[in-house]
Structure formats: structure tokens, C-alpha cells
Length: 67
Image (tube, rainbow, N blue to C red):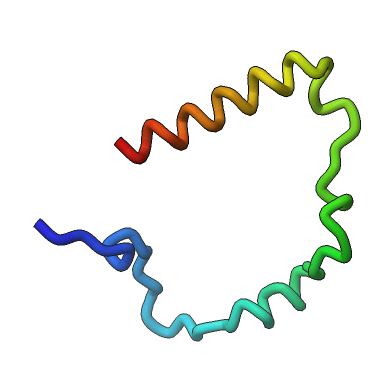
């Protein structure tokens, strides 16, 4: 059985025009990041240990997907 991402795409209703992603971003006021620092959320983790646990779980889940 062959699978592709196309199988997961919703069908557009007839008459819907394709709007390029750049135009959608402009309409929504989305702008590129100037720096990765914009993604920082102070206080996201209460301690270094909590961050370490999160990262260990993240890495484990990624490795599990490779099996």
C-alpha cells in the first residue's frame, strides 16, 4: 500500500480560489522572525530539572519514531 501526503489534504470547495501563502501571511499580519529570541517565553519551565525532563522526553519520542 502506498501513501502520500496528498491523501491528507482537504478538498477545496468548488469556486475557492487558491491564495498564495505569502498573500495569506500579508492578510493576517504575519511577519518573519527577526531573531530566534522572539520565541523565548520567560518562565516556561520552573527549573532546569523540568527543562531537562522535557528535553529527555522529546528526544526519546523522536528516537521512538525511527524504530
